[in-house]
Length: 201
Figure 1 (tube, rainbow, N blue to C red):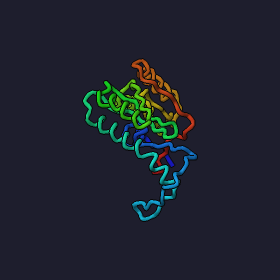
Figure 2: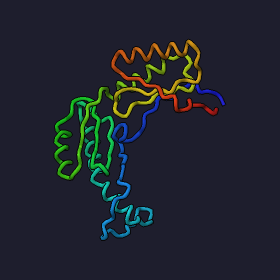
Figure 3: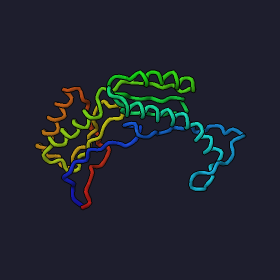
Figure 4: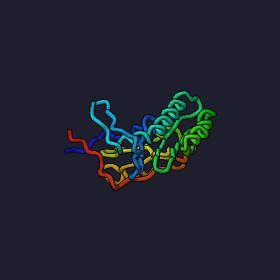
């Protein structure tokens, strides 16, 4: 085992971070309507009544998430940074970078008519700015073995897993780079609960 000398800049794929898919939190004890029958799935298996009820409850949120993704893809003024769906709370929270387009603002009323509370919060930074900051941080550390940099879900900044090496030069380089980013308003937090990334090669 040896520590990798290639820093891992990670971005979670999905609507939870960048709007490409949805993460659902269904009610833990949702009631199942009596008229819901077993529904065959694509692979030929059948859904239980509970699964069918949960799927039915998620459908309007999935449709709403797709609409937000389409608006983001077509917008010239900004993009969705994160989206969190909570079916049990009838809530869909979206974080948006840039100017909120009229189509997205109008979607709040549409969602409300379906009983869904669509919340839109402005992100402090764009995806592109955070990715550039992550690369800047990684390149500033002379020996970044095992270090990883990921993006905060709400677009507020970066999460850093410190490198394997903890010598003075590495610590000073990392601290200096972090201070520069924080001066520009980009939050940087350290996650010491995760083990450093290790390359098995």
